[in-house]
Structure formats: C-alpha cells, structure tokens
Length: 112
Length: 115
Image (cartoon, rainbow over all chains, first blue to last red; front, side, top):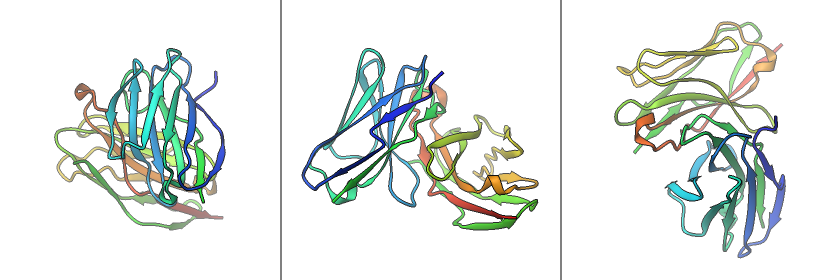
C-alpha cells in the first residue's frame, strides 16, 4: 500500500516563473495539507484541502494556491516565484482533518 | 497564536546515552502534541503523540508526557543508538473538536549519536 507520493522530486525555476507541485494521498485518505520547509527550519503550514475546498490556510500570500481533485490528489501552485520560495515542499494526507497523517518525501524547489 | 520552542542542536551523544530533547509550547486550550523525526533525505515520520494532559506517547523506545502545567512535551529515550541520528521536530495542533488541524512545528533539533 503506497504512502503519500509527491512529484517531481526536484525542480529548478527562475524568479518570476510559476510552478506546480503534485501530491497523491495515501490510499483511504481524503484530506491533503501542504507545508513549506526552508533549510534548517521546521515546516510551515500553507493550506489544507478537504472535499475539494480549502479548509484552512496559513500565513502565505495569494501567490500560493492549490486544488484538490475528486480522487483526493492535490496540486500546489506558486506564481511569481521569489528566491525565498526555495524550500522543501511537503504534502501530508489524513482521513478527515486529523493532523497526524503521513507525510510524503517532499519536492525540493530551487529558485534561481 | 500557537508556537513551539525546542532546544537548539546539534545534540551529540555517545551510543547508549540517555536522551532528552526539550519542547515547550504556547497554545490556547488543550492542543494535541506530536514528535516527528526526519532522517537524512527523507520526509517526516510521526514518532509519537499525545492528545490530552498527562498522556504519555511512546514508540521505538522514545516517550514524551503531555504536561499542561508546564506546557511541555519533552522527548526522552533511555539508550540511544547510532540509527537514531536524525532531526526531531516537536509539533502541535488545535484540539480535535475545533476542526482546525494544521500542525505548528518547532525549528527542529538535530541528534548525532556517535558509536
């Protein structure tokens, strides 16, 4: 039984570009949460999707947006990339809004 | 708002030494408390959790007790192994009945265990 999967593993973009990251939740999970982890820091909550709607949002600008599909998979979109957006982006899934679901391995985004 | 404070690392120990990583939190009500571990090049793994005061979470020899009076959730292990070398994160979320389950993490503590 596959856990949370994310793609791509690594990504390099330049300032001003747009990026889309993808997450497939663990089988049986219906809620997806996204986190940003800067180097040497703890993850910071971006937003959570449940029933295809954004249910909770952290302190991130509108450049960060997301989507959840009927099969519960999710995308994170970041527009107008800044150097400071370079980070590991983690996806977590759970059944319901429970905060202790599993995490994926992350997507490492580098903005040059 | 919610916040988590962890002791700064790195923590360097010899194999079989006793481990304590301190964690204190600020939150209203009774949050759920977690410890996550991140091995090099991997994602986060849930190590243990506690959802109410005086609960003790335990897993793989690690344990932590939810102390409401001191707002703490210190991680302990009686005898560490080289394989325990990783970064440990303390985290909290709002109580289950609030429906708000975003995790707030500390900055992490790197543990290095030497043979």
